[in-house]
Image (cartoon, rainbow, N blue to C red; front, side, top):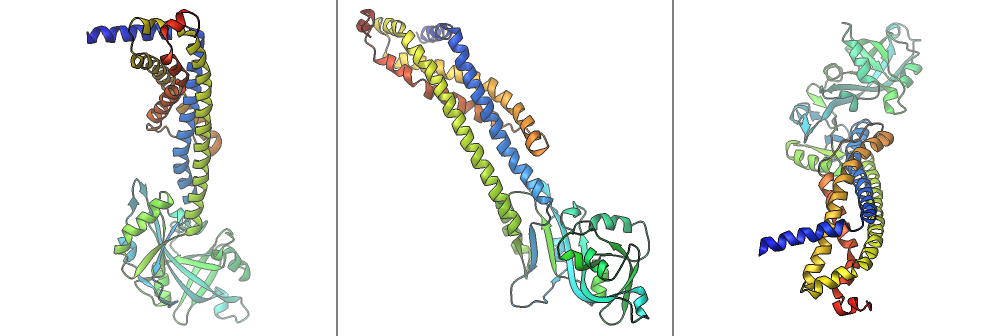
Length: 393
């Protein structure tokens, strides 16, 4: 008996779907278009998080590890801290660099015996970095300059644009650094202007600066570029804190907060757009279902006249709506994911990466919209067969 009912159920469903193919096509088109736009926007929303994380990492470090606030301005850290920081987090690599700062007297090499030669006091910065994308945590241009140092054997140092102008320095000129005795001489590489404090600093490898300043084994701070959202960065800092000892990690607020704010606005805009698209899709399908309800009065009257229960009649029409939503969702969501790749390339310059989770979510939302849009068909369940046959309904 159960098999016979199941066969009859699907036979009626096929008859219902084939009754008016033009209207069926219109409803499928509406559901497919809604699913396509929904899938495209959801995929863009997920990809926007990845793209924003990548773009913001290009701005520099987003985490700074330094001494705990204790009122002292000259505190330093042990340089072993650098090795205790992991090189990766989650699925991404962590870029890290250690720095040591001090004040030195800077003069041109000729100024050692010529009192008229330019000289000034400047910030000396020692640096050491990991091999994971060091350009993300070093001042602009320093990493490129450092690559050229490997081609020569003489001592080299990088000088900021503003300091180089004050001392009238050109590429490969010599300078002398001193905090007293002994003195350190090196050949200059002038950095491109950055508009920041780096323009007035001198950069040398950490080991040499530790020797010049008499701070062997010490660093001032460590800068990190950690992949992930602002929430993931906060979790990384919390997990790292037990290993930091007398130091503490702090996010660079202007980067992490800006990233979270921008993503929040993009995500909110896309969510609102998805909601509007689904609402418009529901209205289009509901209009089609209203016409279907008017056309099927005689069918429903006949079903109920021969003993069809109201619950089974409703189930028939809900199954029809769900089937329409499933077909429209499967086709539209697939098209939407491909559409998002093109939109991602137009917005971010790189095609959006397809996310598998988007496909079932878009299909499920489309099926839900189709079922909710079948509300006009509920009116058929309350029809009385006698009224229908007399033409009163």
